Amino acid sequence: MTAAWGDPAIILRCGVPEPTMLKPGSANYNPSADATFLNGVSWLIEKTGDGYKFTAYQRAVYVEVDVPAAYQPETNALVDLSQAVIDTIPRNDGTTGADVAPLPTASGS
Image (cartoon, rainbow, N blue to C red; front, side, top):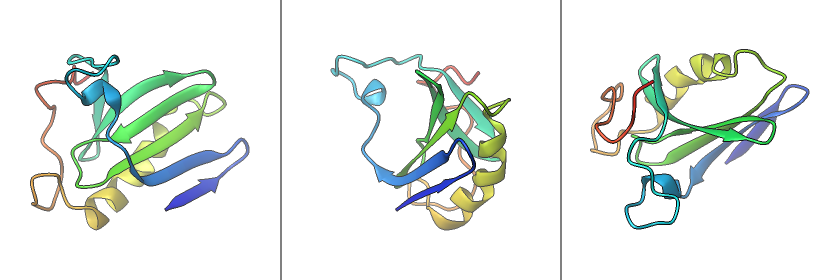
């Protein structure tokens, strides 16, 4: 599923592959990758050319949100989306509810 809104568009994608920075042995593996915990969801943070890409990474399905730099702060979009993620996508451990904050491999910024 993909959705977009705003101008410039914020883009949400469900069912994206696991970010390579979370895969041990990958060229981009980063056990101390930046992450934030907002309203019950842990989000991986990646700087892009024009903003940030956030990935909900403690869910059975990865959810990615691209937020252009025109939105300040970029994390505001996550505040609005977090409850929908909790309500619709089980955690990767098979349970429901909020994520565990922070994951030991993320910096939890």
